[in-house]
Image 1 (cartoon, rainbow, N blue to C red):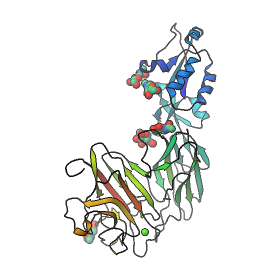
Image 2 (image 1 turned 90 degrees about the vertical axis):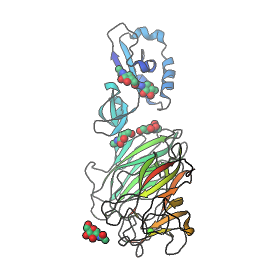
Image 3 (image 1 turned 180 degrees about the vertical axis):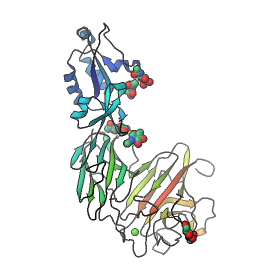
Image 4 (image 1 turned 60 degrees about the vertical axis):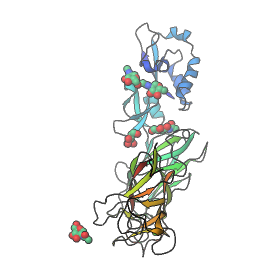
Length: 417
Ligand SMILES: *[C@@H]1O[C@H](CO)[C@@H](O)[C@H](O)[C@H]1NC(C)=O
Ligand SMILES: *[C@@H]1O[C@H](CO)[C@@H](O)[C@H](O)[C@H]1NC(C)=O
Ligand SMILES: *[C@@H]1O[C@H](CO)[C@@H](O)[C@H](O)[C@H]1NC(C)=O
Ligand SMILES: *[C@@H]1O[C@H](CO)[C@@H](O)[C@H](O)[C@H]1NC(C)=O
Ligand SMILES: *[C@@H]1O[C@H](CO)[C@@H](O)[C@H](O)[C@H]1NC(C)=O
Ligand SMILES: [Ca+2]
């Protein structure tokens, strides 16, 4: 869909080129009243805008333009925009914004359009790309029990994934004993299985597989129960077309791009965040061109004497060595683990029994049974990690925080192929 404005034009010009770079699609004389044209465009879908427009243009051949020497229609595509509030929206007319349920927030398209922000809360349904799902009363906090659901309908059948950006995300954390989210929960249903999460997750993201073609909607639900708690959330919902290069790889709940970055488990916080139970998901890192391996290192922990940046099993109040492998022994990872395919320590001579390992757990990040953390290299492609936790913590696993890991991709060389 495009956005149109009727511009009163006092000259004899039949064409007014508002921007020469788009002159063929931006400005055309029209005989048809603009209201009916808007109605037509509303029924169009936002793909192949220019082509749609050109089709439309054929309905109004240029010979009719002599009726219009006073009127010129300025159109521009419904691009993304940043509103005065800093939220992202879609550029459109005031009329279109209010009819679609958005709220105008600043100008765009050189002042011809308004930046239309879609923000919604409990019990609603949206098919607008870039909708923000907020707690009731946002930006104030919400302290009550209930279930707050948003239904996300595809804006077009050619949408395959939904990306959720957890711009604000504070709900009650898991219980102390087994770290299960039994008070508050954020649940995603209707797509591929997504683990329920709780606690503090600001800055996190998730990709939801929405299936191909017309499918059931995806539902996002915040369940709040139990003790009084000041909850706050603002989740940005972006619809990703199937054919784009920026969609996530299949089977990745989280998808990172770039040569370096930081990965965190949900509700990670070195001071008080409890590792969540019942997790099971893939974390993918896009292989950048000419990079053949990936190195992982536990983040700095600015608050604890002994780092808790990787505390997946054992009693984290004591130093715990790294544990590896999938057996049932005391130094194996039978219950909770981060799976790093064929992980090997960087710059340390490997013990014979652990040339490369897959599961890593314990209280130290290393690919051997060390008390000392190490950077870990994996050259298995594509670059992926899997995180798994069961539903039990106490009495063996105490105060585990989960993980925060920095990654750096390694260029293809003689050593990394
Ligand atoms: C025309 O478009 C170009 C390229 O997008 C932009 O840099 C320029 O500011 C525009 N000019 C006007 C008058 O809108
Ligand atoms: C011109 O049109 C193209 C395609 O619709 C769009 O990507 C581009 O941003 C437009 N440029 C301007 C200056 O509006
Ligand atoms: C708006 O979009 C930009 C660019 O994609 C992004 O960096 C920024 O975080 C977004 N802001 C919000 C509030 O979503
Ligand atoms: C939704 O918006 C994002 C940018 O914020 C864009 O990349 C994506 O293509 C849009 N999705 C659809 C279905 O238009
Ligand atoms: C931990 O840090 C505190 C002060 O920050 C210090 O008093 C204590 O000795 C440290 N413990 C260890 C084991 O290093
Ligand atoms: Ca566990």
